[in-house]
Image (tube, protein in one colour):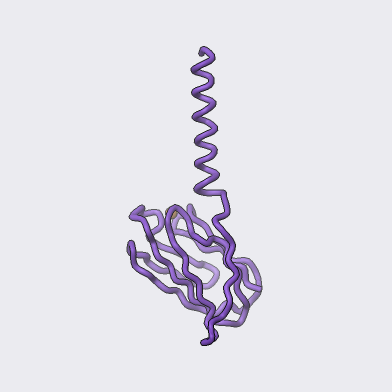
Amino acid sequence: MNTIQIAVSLGGLVLSLFIVWFFWLAPKGQMRVSASSSGVQEVAISVKGGYTPDIIVVKAGQPLRMRFTRQESSSCSEMVLLPDFNQSAKLPEGEEVSIEFTPEKPGEYGFQCQMGMLRGKLIVE
Ligand SMILES: [Cu+2]
């Protein structure tokens, strides 16, 4: 390999590392949810290569409504699962789908697509 080939390979490596970081590892934003006047904590989550926001902070003992809107056709994200709460939903593209439950115990709970490639975190305080 000459210098240019090495530079090109290194460039490609750096680029793929960046893509991995960008799509899978970078936090897409933390959101603290407050209850509306009806007492429901409500959060809108957009689904596109990940969940935005992907870290959601809520209060224990208050009903929570998670409104998912999937903005892509990738089959990866067609389901969202919250195994700790026995909740799951199919997300048709472009349609808002709500999941409602009351997180009773403080802790950290994951939500994810069916293969576990997209992940988000629910922090219950
Ligand atoms: Cu997936």
